[in-house]
Length: 199
Image (cartoon, rainbow, N blue to C red; front, side, top):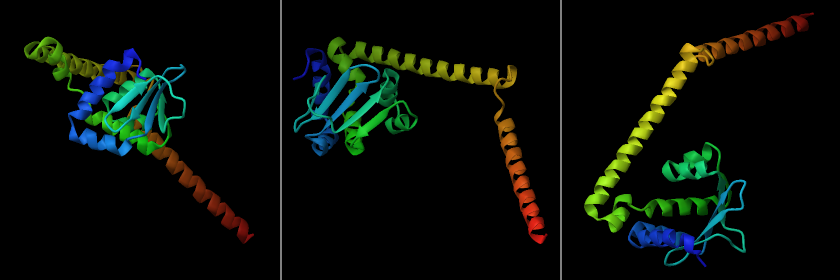
């Protein structure tokens, strides 16, 4: 049974699944299967169970889920906002169980992703929702640009001003030098071995 806290999320997800033929097709592929999200270092778990008509949510389960993903809140935010497979490969998320089921749920969630502006218009009306969505997009763009600028400034400071981190060209030159030294040592070892054999 779905806890009261999760009912709005469940109904939103199921409404979007019902409104998308792609999402309904994806749901039929994983019907009867389950995915569990686990918040690392806590007992919190969120289970998604795919049925014939939609997805049900719960905070517990008697049997192990077909697939589970464990991570921090930041990990789940990255999974939701970016490329999930890239986020998993980058670390921070541990996938256990059937990876195809986990990917099936991920594709379903992507196909059933709510339209923020549409959902907001149900509460505020079309005009207000449009303005609020525009403000949200502009704020997100500003945050993204500010983050990129900050990271670029930190990188420049560390490589050019404080010299705590070497420049890429310096690292490449060092690696090339190490490779050259290794090749020279290998040649010297081969010559010494040949001279030893001649004796």
